[in-house]
Image (cartoon, rainbow, N blue to C red; front, side):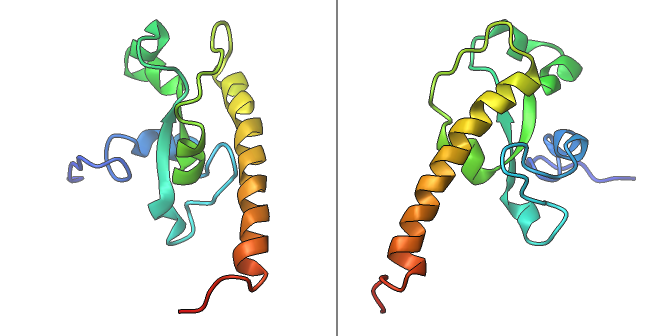
Length: 121
């Protein structure tokens, strides 16, 4: 008998994570490698109130994708057009924004941390 879990990684989001191969749909973070699995979450592609978001479990899962925490949160509150777009089109729309922001963070990291400019304790 498989135990029931009430957290996302082992419970309610596991089916979506498994469907997406335990990889972030935006950056490709591989959750099959430990401890990357701990950084996975799921991303609702539609805003609250969108009737397609409230479909039955199978339909709703089409509009939920595996995402690492960074990619899920970086543009989480940015309103994006959703009308008439497929789940894959919604992912691609957000992926462009996420990759742009990742580039900004990488440039910051290279200048302030990776380049040796970080203050030593």
